[in-house]
Image 1 (cartoon, rainbow, N blue to C red):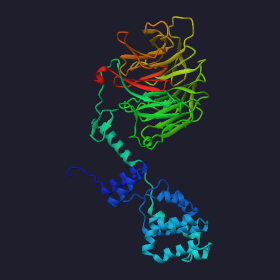
Image 2: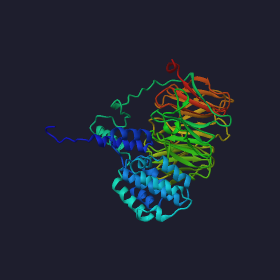
Image 3: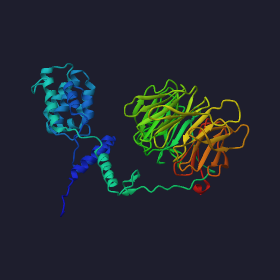
Image 4: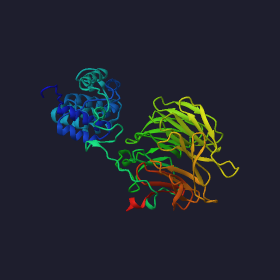
Length: 521
């Protein structure tokens, strides 16, 4: 290439990076098939010294597991597996030794290439006693044999940085963003080679019943939510499971390997709250025992565990804008902020005198709102933890009404959506000044239990104790649609970030998805 330097990438290096990806994701059969067809090996381990230490200490189960996907010289495999058989015989694990001797591929190959050496092992296995002098007739002690094998392995093994494929792809995407070829924050489609075009439906109310997810007789969903990018829909249930659903069909997603293998994300106690990071990569979940866990959604791996995030059950969760901090509220009357990187509780926000039912960071990350069964909403400085405002939403009676949820209005760091146990939801300023009231007009039996706001802020959807879904158009300030969604007590509601798709769940054991008439048709 004239006028500049060119970089050439070896084809074998590309294969090795793919092999590493397969190994890290436990795709063992595919890895072995690719190694065989490409005749390229990936002799990497997470810790060379750890493997060699296992060899010198005779931890052969760990050694065999570590080398199971490696391509090693045949003489080294002969020595290694021969030593395994000899030490099994020394431990008088006769049956296991014979099974390895007759079925392990390296020892089957040994029988063909060095029949006398294999026959000697068979003779040792047939004896009713173990004699070290005969077992090591070829010279050296057990320790010397182990050291020799470890020395040979050291020359074959190497360590490389983890996740090289994903790192290189990430670096390439960052370069494209720096060059202006990819919009910042855009979701990239690697297969098509461009930013994903997100289809955003014109916001409206929902009318049509979609898929219904049914739980067992003794379980039901306690919480659910859509990820910010709309690609995940997760529920947390009374039996402690966190399940990722295909919301188009109402079926458990089997394209996620961990769910395909029935290795579900879970808690020991009922899951009461969940929330997603802004990039939709992480899921935080809180349980009745005060445990907070953070999961990587695509792998199902628990990446952080806060054993005692609270002294009581965790009722609500919210990620900060940069996903570095997680706010939680609890039955223990406190709100707390936890550091994802440090794994420690960073702040405790005290002032509420009853259950904390809702927490939410502002879009600019400067403030945190909380609400409680004590009837109050509090707005905190996210950095200093100072309580900036405390107020009670308007109410028609002198009775103290529990505030069920609070959230910043989309795109408005100066307005809150407040839902208390009444037939009215309120949009207020941070100090509590009323901006707009959205009322069902129902005097009895229609108090709201939970509410959510659409991503563009045009619609507010509320579920009430009469098991109906109330949909309000914010601009008009009017109730536009009423829909019966459940037969028994409804628990919660959430909405898809860019589609007219609403989910509701009830203690009758169903989680239902609802669509607009236009989307359904």
